[in-house]
Length: 218
Length: 217
Image 1: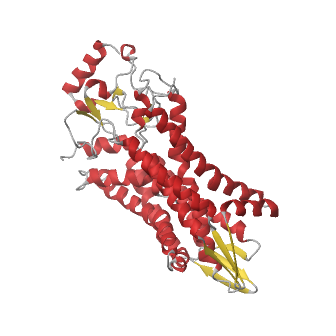
Image 2: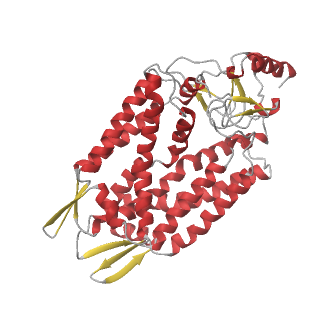
Image 3: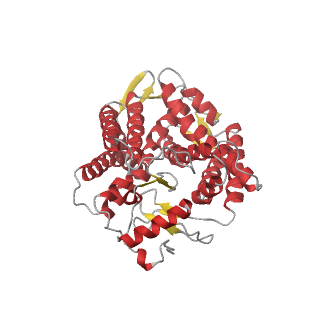
């Protein structure tokens, strides 16, 4: 760390503060030199992914978010699991499972499942579509694009679809002795949903989106 | 793995942090600001050079999470209501039952998700916060690994909460046997949520403040 380097950063900051980036994970300054799509720019200090531009990041994210929303809504309409016990067969959808839970203090569990597995993932998808659709169309970012995309980013750790699918498998094995369980259509749709959501999250380059949003007036 | 590092200029090989220049780097998007700004011009997030009271807040959430983990392991996670006879079992008893019946896959998944991850997570967050607080000579690479562990692994503890919710929601169909969630399940869920918040309150920038020149190359 020399005064010379600090002077370079100072000069660059005075000229255009957006030409610098401070690693969000460790605060190290870098010159923000855009990298080619498909390449990854990592922090020289902590290897945090600073830029991760994807070819067609907007098209991909919007397309996958719409796909995921449709899968989510469709999934809710179909039986998730089928149960046969002593000659009786029943079918339950995700919503029925959640409503069956909602008695007394079990409501807390029902709310947790509804929020983490259904509500938060779909809110995040809608937020991404809201921000990225106009950008994809070449229009300026929508009103409050900053706040909405920030909110979508903050939601990320709380959307737990992939964890729920593992929970389902464990629950099925636990139940094997008690009843015969089969997978309903919604289970397979849900598996598809988990894959689409993973692809969608991988298609988002935050740096690209923030750069596009930054150009809009505050 | 292709690493296109941003600073290709060899003269800028040493690390200057935004704080060294009197600037603030946004914690969300990395935009660099003058030290007197309060909100990021790019992403509208609140700006702080370092998150205020990050350590106290992490401790508060972590201790709450640890306290909830005690009843979560003492109280039954599930009660099987078999023909009116109510028998509950805790997390540890549940794992033991699966080992006995030979369902090793389930036993191991629950062992990892419900016992190993929650306990080791609290332990790891505590080590991390202590090492930041007292500037322990722990190298940054280790701390970064610990940080990533709590960031990405912590949410997987929710598996058991979902299992309980599913079982309780499903088994009501059969009239003979029914499974009810136990109080332990709710304590467990709260413990997972509180420790997730604790992990989010850690300011990873402070990890690097103790030894700013120690890179992980």
